[in-house]
Amino acid sequence: MVEVLCKLPETKSELTFECVNVLTPLVRRSLEPIGPAFLAHARRSVRGRSWSEDERAMAETSVKTVEDDDVSDDDEPEFEDDLLRDPKDWKSQDHYRVLGLTKYRINATDDQIRRAHRKKVLKHHPDKKAASGGLNEDGFFKCIQKAMEILSDPVKRRQFDSVDYAADVAPPSRKTTGNFYELWGPVFAAEGRFSRVQPVPKLGDETTAKKDMDAFYSFFYNFDSWRSFEYLDEDVPDDSSNRDNKRHIERKNKAARQKHKTDDNARLRKLVDDCLGADPRVKMFKDAEKKAKEQRKWEREADSRKAAEEAKAAAEAAEKARAEQEEREKAEKVGAKKAKENAKNAKKKNRRVVKAAAKDANYFVDGTASASAIDGALSDVDVLFEKVSDEELADLTKELTGLTDAAAIKAVFVARVEALSGAGKLSASSLKILKA
Image (cartoon, rainbow, N blue to C red; front, side, top):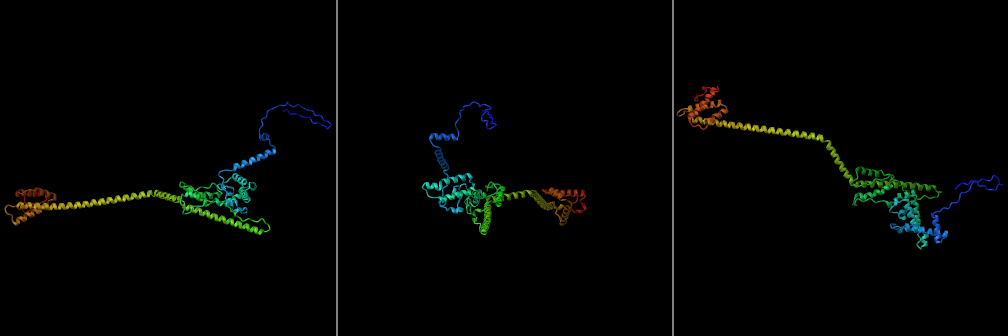
């Protein structure tokens, strides 16, 4: 569209209007009807409703849609003690159960709380109950409102969560049998909801490393809890006229909170002690550490052990060599002694043979040998024994063996005497019968 500039009159007497420029020609365009306003106009036109009639019908439809959306198959059942509860006893009520949020509890989101509250209000509003001819449940409706008041306020909700014992998981007793990790895992998962430090380490299982197990127990032994127990405080009267009584109640509440805190810390400490005492991984890791320590000690002592083994082996070898040497020496001594004995026996035997040969030779005389001839022949044989060595005696015995002729035997003796005389070992003057 072209801008139209109009000149304003300078004085009141100037009543004429002067157009500085002309308007552009009109243009007709087709517009598509759209939007909530057009839809409302079309709905009123089609159904013949007025503005107020259409608004009332749409409000009823909206309420019906909300009611239909809020009805679900997983709604929690309502308990008779909650329906008949005195709303003044609101501190003992389970706000999550009143709103039907027990499966969520501390994990319930703000949106879930709002939706649960809306469903309960639509169902238990006193006006709706009265209109439908139902019982008057105004007390339970106040409980619903109180639960919404507590759970929609972050501070009040945390105070209630601090004492929400319905969310606790009881630890197993010593007599309880079953999987250790399945029994104790949920207990510490429930305790972890009070931790200022997130995320909370898990108990783990038999495959958990030792450092992770130690980190878990260290976390809970040094647990930083946000539990404050204000929810259990005795109500402080609003009457400001008795300030001393008000201060007394405040001090009493503070002391009670501190006692609850101390008792809860002791309870958690004992809980961790019991879990640690029953944890099968503790013994497993101790045994593994003991084996590793023994292995390290074994490796450290390997050199000294090897040297000791080598020294022991050398000592055993030396002892064995000494024993073998002693055995050899003993055998040699026995052999020498035996050889000596044999040589001695052989010498005696040879002498007997030689003497017997002298006898067979008639003591080296012709005819009957006289006593003096026998003594002289035996004396010569003894001289001969003194001059010959054992080897020569053995040779002499060998030569005489088998001879029976006296002349032949005497010839052997004479030959031996000549050999000894020629070697300078025997003097002919020392003999009496055997002469060359």
